[in-house]
Structures are given as structure tokens and as C-alpha cells.
Length: 68
Image 1: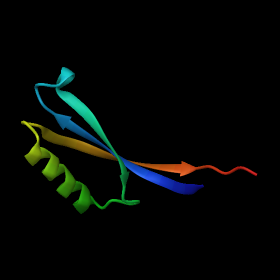
Image 2: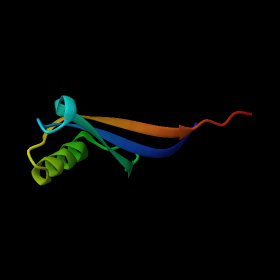
Image 3: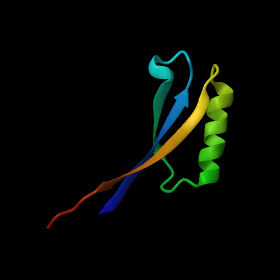
């Protein structure tokens, strides 16, 4: 398998969202984001939002599977 790209799915909570939570996808992030990078990113999203609270982040690595 070969790495293609990495995505980050960030779950934010806010009473304005249906069900109180919303998953926000971010594509083409660094190959292996560190916990510190994710924490800084989530802090920035929280500061720039209108009352959102960070819940969790899911790192998704997309790969190409090559078969012979």
C-alpha cells in the first residue's frame, strides 16, 4: 500500500447543531499529524467558532492498494 493523503475529521459540539455535534472534515493535512498539532488546530477552530467546543479528532490515512 502507498500513502495517498491524510484527512482529519474534527467533531465539534454546539447547541446550534442538529443533535448537538457536527463532524467537520479537513483534507490534505500532513501525513502523520502529532497530538500537539491536532491540539493547536482544534484550539484555533474553537477560538474562531461561534461557541463550538472541541470533542475529538479522527485521523484518516488514505492509501492506494496495488494488486499484482
